[in-house]
Amino acid sequence: MPVEPDVSELISVAQACAILDAVAVEPRLARATLGDAAGRVLAEDILADRDYPPFDKSLMDGFAVRAAEVGEGILLKVVAEIAAGQRAGRDLSSDECAAIMTGAMLPGGADAVVPVELAHRRGDVVSFTHPVAPGKAVQLRGAEVASGARVLNRGTLLGPAQLAVAATVGAARLSVYRRPSAFILTTGDEVVSVRSRPAVQKIRNANNILLTTLLMRLGADVAGESHAPDDRRRLESAIRAGMKHDLTFISGGMSMGNYDYAPQVLKSLGFELRITKVRIRPGKPFVFGVHPSGTFAFGLPGNPLSAYVCTLLFASRLVRRLTGLSAEPRWSTARLSAGVAANGPRELYQPARRTVDGAVDPLPWRGSGDVFSLANADALIIRPENAPQQSLGEFVRILELP
Image 1 (cartoon, rainbow, N blue to C red):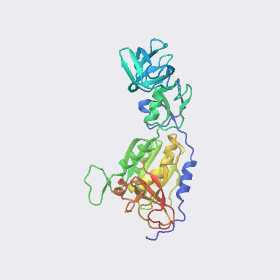
Image 2 (image 1 turned 90 degrees about the vertical axis):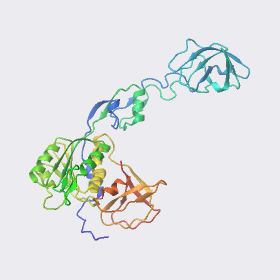
Image 3 (image 1 turned 135 degrees about the vertical axis):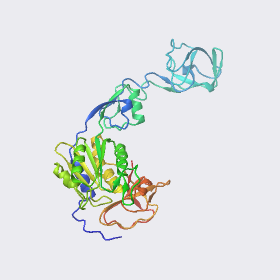
Image 4 (image 1 turned 90 degrees about the horizontal axis):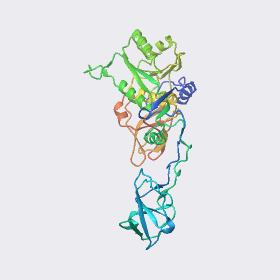
């Protein structure tokens, strides 16, 4: 492993996370229809508007009966046929039953359902092969949820099942937290359009789509984007455009080179730079700025893997809180499917892939520009600062990719 320069003046990953978490944010509210609420976070409790089920319900196709009247050789008269969504015309009297479909409302007087395969019907008369216990194949009113019960908690991320619950209880419009608006600014004379045929010394702009897709998955709305060459005035103009949004993400121009203007420009525009460098690999030149107007700026390294890791690890903490979620991403542990070398003084986030048996397979580390390795990953292995070598079968901490 190459010897790294002194990194003692850089803050740790944990310190960077603490700085981000200490920033006061106030998620904003919006009203959304069910169709627009997917992926948003609920900002209110949702209560059941009535009992569920709202009636005693048949769980099978069969015959609604008085359980005490059912036995071998007993004949009952079929006095009604009840489909789902219908009501019986009257209650059952002695020696009567009703043909009933799954999901239909039991008639008054019935306390059980005999499955159709355990009954023999001839015309309007039914006989049974076995007795039946009260409550058989019946779900009582309110067995799922009682009227007024809380069915969705404030802070719930709204997915298919949660939206189905809202629809069930008639919550057609929901109070949700707004998604923060984000602006993506890529930089650098070496970066050209994805549609172009680049000269040998140029690269296509992969960071724009990388960050757009990642931020959408994290819960932000990408409301604008731009590219600025290595020109201070044009960079300042582009950042000013980004300041109209909640979050500005700037990739490139964060290091110590002659054309790395971004930190200086951010300060000149009034941003307080609370993070400038972190003991992390990839992603050391990460910048976080807070503006008095309430907008935030994230300065990301230009290499795609570095930009991805910094956005996922650091920026996501603020994005999640702005959307109403907790800051913490999805951590877990897994067994190594292959050994990993000792780590240096910077916390390492190595692309990896989960295996079918639940282990994690470290992918080849080809540097912070290796988007090809990232494309094959579904997790990052976290290696602490100065961690020793670890062998196959040992457990490591991993960060799952969204």
